[in-house]
Length: 485
Image 1 (cartoon, helix red, strand yellow):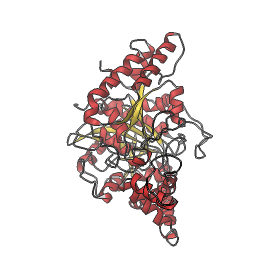
Image 2 (cartoon, helix red, strand yellow; image 1 turned 180 degrees about the horizontal axis):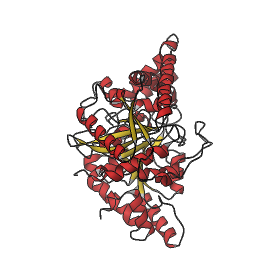
Image 3 (spheres, rainbow, N blue to C red; image 1 turned 90 degrees about the vertical axis):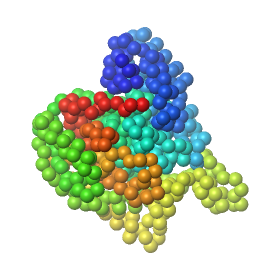
């Protein structure tokens, strides 16, 4: 039994039955990281000693007869834009290279309370701005299925860690597809919850009206277990929704009977690789066989979503990243002759090219004389995109589409062409603009690389997403395939 490839459900069951110890499982994961990390480079920071100590404490509590939850004693990883008390949080940026937060974000605090073992912080595109991890200021992360390819982004390190058996599950943030797209590229499950479902307190902000925290795992059932722990209202996050949280695990029925699923033709047109379209179409037939009613639908403003996103997200980034000035914390440039010069030098030396590009774009869109022409118009388009989904959900329970228009591309293939890179998120961005939940599920391979099927649901109806994804995985075996490392 390869402990490092257990699902969360399996690991939890083995621990509860006393068939393995948390320390044994944690050491197996750390050994796997040691063996594979030279090829993959998923982690910015590892917390081996702390993880083993936590595992021993969970084992002691379990032997003492304490009743523990399903996450207790199971190793996981978190993206390096989550604040972790006493452990550095870099956002894979030079400007935060030595920043050690004095507090835990809400999700991290909930994981610790649940007894989860956090083994380290994963690599990302700098400040979560990118689709390949090539924008990390630290180093490149590689796809476990083909190390000449990118793992997707921005949460590429989190996706690759699960795919490579370096973590049982992990966490990322999704602003325009940064959980779902790398999940597709790496052949794992990635869930972006509804905006407001999971607290963002302690997540370093990129675009505050779009960011959302979510899990990577091997199965939808694992994601349901994780959501049961991390969801819920948080008074520390003003955008956190005070809505009821169901037991997501109880909603998994194993079938799709009665579910109405829409296929938006806009997501199967020009730009979608033939192999991707074929795998997703085959997956739709599986959903039909499981009892789903499937029909075509239209989301006519999809073609404008990318343009609107690349006004709104950079505008919010230009505001959020203004706090990095070299005064209170983070990198500080030397030789500034006055405060303005200090700001300029610090940001010039501390931020990478893509972050600078987006700050400049966002600042321009918000500037006097251009606000109405760009930012205001983009917000109006955002409303149109949301209305498209609202109309579709009057008839359908779920929408199905490719997660990404292509499989993982080669390292360096799109790095010098920002527009081509931005197009990698064309299937995921509308979901963030509308604040909806979405999940990517492995649905086959094209050219030897994983393909992801994206399911999109109504706001706060993660239960329907998980039910359909779980039923699909019960009828297929793509999630059991493993890369050769």
